[in-house]
Image (cartoon, rainbow, N blue to C red):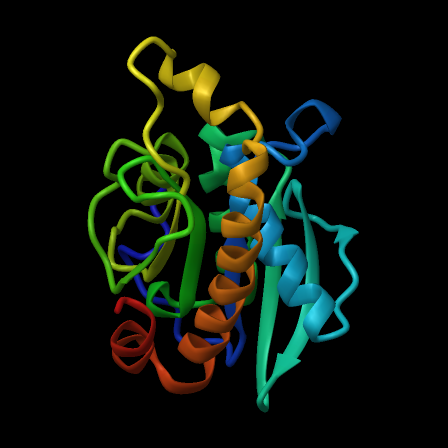
Length: 199
């Protein structure tokens, strides 16, 4: 069921920041779990504690510069991320423009960030599922580059692989910058955040 075809009468003042990934030890630290790493960094910075909630996800409520935000890490596995994101948005009546989805992107070099106000899924199954469940693609997203796989490597195997030793400093820095970009979006809005972090 689409979420935003009919707007609820009263919107929440809460914003939703959803970091995408796959739950479980076998996926920890993999390229596909960059969204989880950014959500964890935001929780660390703003004293949030994740707990299992009612949305098939872990969530933590934090205050960032006077703004209330729900950090969300879906437990649905990546390709069904929309179930958790839409459930949380529906429960708290959060409009699409206040949902920031944070995820990995093969098309960007390792560590590169890209913010957009809206758009298609770009081949990312988790984002495609969120678009399907929300009934709109008009939500902001923050992509974190994980690089392209080598020619001999399957794309699925690649996104489920861990970063190489030489990539670790790049991705560590990218996670910190992505958390700062998400904070900028929450404090100042999408246009200022894009101007600052898409350089």
